[in-house]
Length: 170
Image 1 (cartoon, helix red, strand yellow):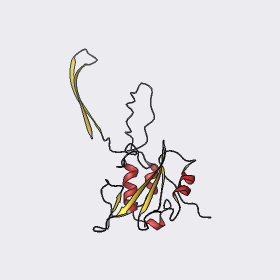
Image 2 (spheres, one colour):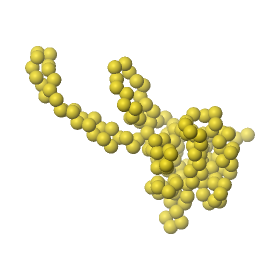
Image 3 (cartoon, helix red, strand yellow):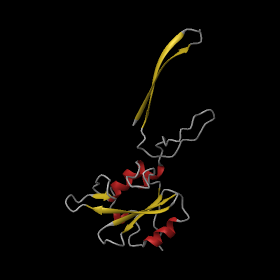
């Protein structure tokens, strides 16, 4: 979080000097869509908006196997095929191919695809994304958190999960 404080003097309508204090708080850990740029505004390239309609698609009270964005036992190749035509930030969760009890978060980034392991800690039973995330009681709790906050994974630290990809039932 960054807090900017501005102190200064401005001239009122009757040409009398007037002191002012103003502060602006920026939470740089939150991700969101940029607010529309208005004429005469300064764009600092910071994601300051918190309007995230897709976070409502992540109901942490629903078990993982009933989440629409959980695709079960699909391969990483199939996950990439599903994500290829979609926008950057689109994601799904699937079973890990290499470790049976783990899961993978597959994310489309500007540079391609990222497959991040979700592991369950044997001692606490909580889930960890990659090596450096804080633990979460459930995978839906984790996914909801990273829809609002940046990913703690090298190469994706500038990204949030933006668009959950709902599995198509045939």
